[in-house]
Amino acid sequence: MTKAHLLIVDDEPNTLASLSRAFRLAGHEATVCDQPARALELVKNQHFDLILSDVVMPGKDGIALLEEVKSLGVTTPVVMMSGQAHIEMAVRATRLGALDFLEKPISTEKLLLTLENALRLTRLEQENRDLRGSLGKHELIWKSSTMAALMAQVERVAASETRVCILGETGTGKELVSRTLHQKSQRSAGPFVTLNCAAVPVELIESELFGHEKGSFTGAAARHLGKFEQAHGGTLFLDEIGDMPLPMQAKLLRVLEEGELERVGGSGTVKVDVRVIVATHRDLAEQVRQGKFRQDLFHRIYVFPLMLPPLRERRDDIPILVEHFAAQIVRQNNWKSVTFSPQAIADLKKHSWPGNVRELRNTVERLLLLASGNAVDTSTVRLALPLASSTEATSSPLQHGTLAERIDQVEREIILQELERQQHHITNTAKALGLERSHLYKKCQQLGVELSSAKKAPE
Image 1: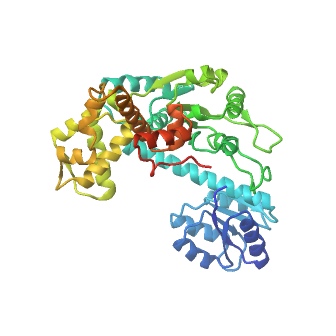
Image 2 (image 1 turned 90 degrees about the vertical axis):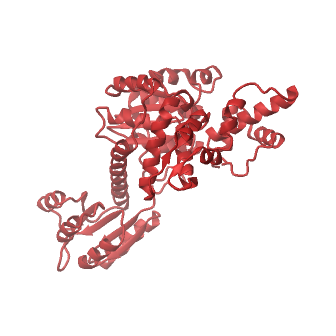
């Protein structure tokens, strides 16, 4: 569970001491307060992940505190507790916006579960707000016939429960397409949860997907809900599914087939209702042939493939993408508007864009910073993309040098492009090229490829 900061309000010193101790032992931060009026001042000046308040206190009671917190527009979840609880009090607190109502004495396990549920709700609400905002501001931008054909497929499959497998190179917008599928589906009011299978260590991926029970392993201080349970009633996007370890593939297959899971350390099953969308930059069919991906799982997820074209195959979209990104970056940074000359756009269209749309967005930001005055011209493009002018030359067979020299140049270009595609992540680059990481290091040393700023895989 993520570390949380709680505000505990109660007029009983023993209660404050025991509750704060329980939360701190679980790795959280707790601020205690014995006066509702003081608590309101704290809420005005600090951020809390959860407010836990007693109901019956001298002077201003917990219900009045709840009303004032909500009147301030504070979105922090509030949980009420009382040793004199009755149904009318609980109903009133709930109507005023309390997340839960607990009866004293409260067990530590119940407290931590309540906190976890509150954090989960807050996270999902924020994700939904981000999703609505992103679809309004960062929607898919296109005008090419290639993308028009793709978006027609997206519209066709979005409203169904069909499993979609999004294919394409890194940086082509696979997550944005998955969000669009969710937003246009009947599950759009539900959560949209993502997991990058390549970014989670092997020993943690089961817990991330299926959750774990308290005490199931060292450090498991409380129950943790995995991505499937977080996505209940909505959509789970599994990015880079081709990098999921084989043992986990078998467990994922079972959940897809039966609609239920077991948390790590759990003794029972949990039913889940989730639409799963997956994505990968790998050739899954080839992965199956090599024994790196389960054939039965492949047939479960590869129901409706969507192939996202690389940017070099949709160059007609570059002008409007540049305009979109420039306006977005200018607005975010409160900069003055900058125009792009026709020749600058033409130069950008000539580039090979190995990092695809993601690389283009980063390049536009770099161009805005490098622009002299309020215009980006061809000299600015050459400054931001020094290799752009040689793109056409490197895309055709080299005409000079010995065979060995030409092979070295081609290998160097391939490694540079794959590093860019993998955001300079060494392990992922080695995997994509079918090399051991040590072999990639040696190759780069031989070919003069700089790896000093490259990223290593998490241990």
